[in-house]
Image (spheres, rainbow, N blue to C red):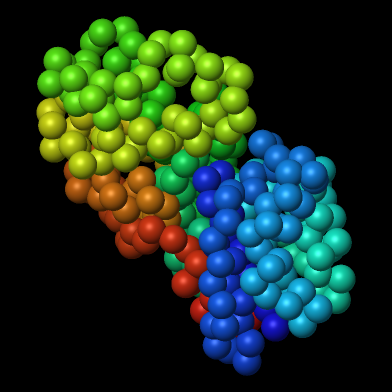
Length: 280
């Protein structure tokens, strides 16, 4: 049996396959090692994953994860997985490689991630080449959910949001300033907290204020990520992630203005990863 996982900062989708067929799909919290320790990863696996499958039968694990970009971070994930899956060969990959393999399989192209966080790469069909690092929600994540949430909260708290949006937000969330600051500075996973406000923004994306906010975020993604790739304009850019998927119309508008071509946009890379590992 193979266990394939796609892990963002918010959620992880695990798919168990056997003889080329999907046997089980399990959803757990995201396991970004920048926000987790071995102990917290173990807690998630113990409560939300391992009760739903027989660990002894799993022979291969292919884990694609946000934050899995250094040997130290990868060991947080691989070492904890090995405690439960003692008979498995464990492979840990960066989530941008997962996006590229899902989108292109063994072909080439530019891949972008627009989920809780953002990232991009040029993929030659085997390897990913990144021209700029994704610096996370503090210094980067342009166009991603955390960036949209941060942009919205900044406008809201500085009293720059229109009255109709402010009233709707107050009615839905009932947050005080201290509630927001406490969540950002004292509670775990501030990037998830910021990205959660996409649930407020997405249904209202036709509102001129929100449309402009999202458009500026996607323009920042293009300028801070895509323009670093040589000859980037003729190459179609394909995307994975819920932000690119749910704000597709605005993303297409920005890409057209920048004379860029969109290839495909998918919400979740897991189906492409299943196909990839069934044939490779």
